[in-house]
Amino acid sequence: MLDELYVFECRNVSSTCTLTPSKWYNYISPKVTAQFLKEISVLVQSGEIHGIIGNAGSGKTTLLKIIAGRCCGEFTGTITLNQQQLTRQMFDSICAFVNFNQALIETINIRAMLRFQARIMVCGLNDQEITERINLLLQEFDLIAYQNILIRDLNESARKRLLLCMHLISNPILIILDEPTTCINALNNYQLMYALSLHIKRTGAMVIIATRTLRSDLYQLLSRVTILFYGETIYSGTTQELPLYFCHIGFPCPINENPATYYLSLAMIDRETTERYQETQEQALKLIDLFKNSIDLQLHQLTSEVLHPIRLMKPLLFHGKPSCYYQFFILLQRSFCALNSSAHVVLLRLLLLPLLTLLICFCSDPFLTSDKWWSPQNKAALLVIYSTLFSIVSIFFTIFNESIIHGQSEQDITDGVYSKILSVLSFLFASAPNDLLAFTSSILIISFWHFYLNWNYIWNLALPLWCCYQYFKILVLIVIFYTKNAEFTATFLIEFCFGSVICAGSFFVAPRTFLSTNDWRHMLMYINFYRYLLSFINFKFINGTKAGDCIFDNTEMINNKPMEQFCRWTNGTMFLNEYYPENWDYSMEIFNYYFIILFVIIIAIISLLCFKFNKR
Image (cartoon, rainbow, N blue to C red; front, top):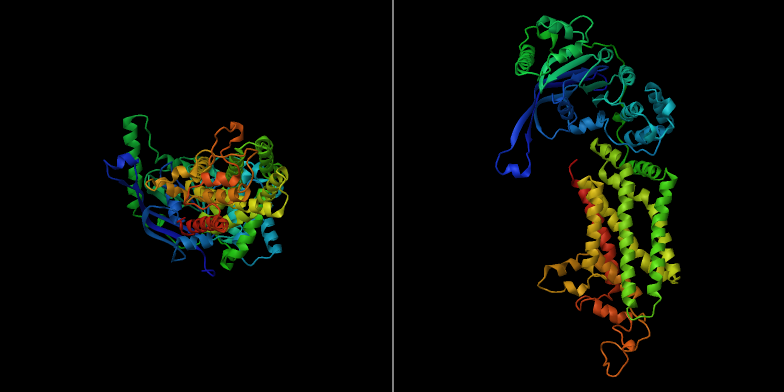
């Protein structure tokens, strides 16, 4: 393949898709199958740009997705590259699909982004070769002046050129662009397309673009064009033969008119009146029939003749992709750079949890220093508040951090650049330093505030709460992976957090409330992470503590004794014995300790399985 001219062909591609109405409608009506494309044929050769032109709903995007292997419907026909079937795996290996609507990591600059992209996608290039490659693309697409500017500060035109450079960094054979000229002015349109045309003539690549309108200056850059009308072909061939073909069938292009725009207008439906609607529809259908039944097939048949002399350049993707370990290392660097590029955001992540912890310590101090008999319950409530605080902060910080890199990572995964597992692992490791600093500061604040300054106390408090933090961090990644909605993820997991605390037992509802063997709710205690977490820390920090100066409890007679000398619990052990059900031994320290760790390991394994076996 490397020693030949590249030739891409679509022959007689037809596509059908089953439309699924709303759920209630399915019960009374069968699903509808619609045909989106009908016998579409497209040819592209090395150094050419092929334009797919059509109005909204004509099937342009559907055709591009079929070529790229991203269409969920069924299709017939053949799609080949140098007479080899173009599969999704082959496309992801040596071709590129540029989605100009994709999100990017906004907090790094252009040069850093291109360097990360080159190191992730291409194997076998040293730093000097990567730098030379980046400099060449920056010069070709007029991005030299923007190279040190953050992506969030780019205008739309520069952003589109950057997206294109990110895919061209590996010299793909075939580049597919969907609506590249929208949202930018005429001058920037020409700047983008002209730079692209020079690039493919230098490298010998092929380009397919889909667009609704095509101005005359852009039309001059195309080698071939296909005009679609609701999934059928009005014309497909070279731009040189386009006026000749329509003149041959009786539709000559007026002088000084743009041929592409004029002939596309012939396929537009005029809905002003019923008569005009029927007339324009019949005209479009006539053009379709004329193209199918044309006698002079040489005007639009597929040919292997080379229209432009070009010099082939070996695609860098033929060197193969870097190993998953190297990709993980680069993704870790990129994620760390993206998450720590803003000083005020880093300060927020470092200070929010310690400040909230300090606030809770300050507000809880009067309750913990009192010598009343209910002090064990106050301590239990405080431990619940701490664990809930760490869970909620973990949810919000994970959603916030993940949103920074989510858009670009998802597009890279869709394009087959790397796996979801690598993306998740790199995110977890990149966000760990800030999380660990904030967490450690919070634990030290709790220890200093309550005068427990020994390492045993710090360790017994830090380990379960760190596991709690990581448990909800992984849960966020799982839920947001399936829902694709940050607001829903936050709402759902906060409700899940509070529900778990209640079911595990807290100052809201005692655990023995769920003890009834005839009630399904008692099972929630045994599959609840908080059950083991609270049992462990309650035993460590409440068991054996004194509960005030009272001397009588509910196990002794109170005959002729002052009421102020009576208390429900004289120590923390009595409180815990009443607090926990008889069939739950809260004092099983090692059992609860290992179950806390086991929960985190299990949820991590579940997340990896979800990311591994979920279809793209």
